[in-house]
Length: 109
Image 1 (cartoon, rainbow, N blue to C red):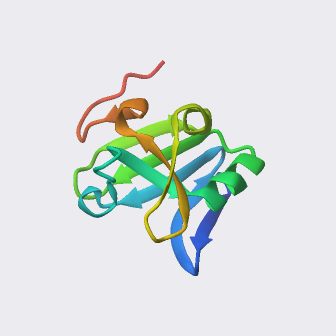
Image 2: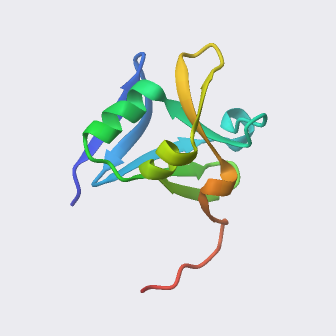
């Protein structure tokens, strides 16, 4: 069983680390940044994840059932710094995420 580390920002849980992946559960209608067309993570959390050697970020949209996955390297290459009043965040446009739609099957390799 993989070790699970809860990630907290300002006393609120924002996700968890499992193995080399940061997993975040969101409601798309509340957390999708329309002006950038993507999802963001706190810059301080991004730096912590990078320092821990985390390789992937997974966002599970609880209201759509979709799962989006991107590498921390994608955030480094294509991310955009934003501050919407909740501190600095790094946002990655949806076109850089791998999206698995709800109910979509994944074939084993």
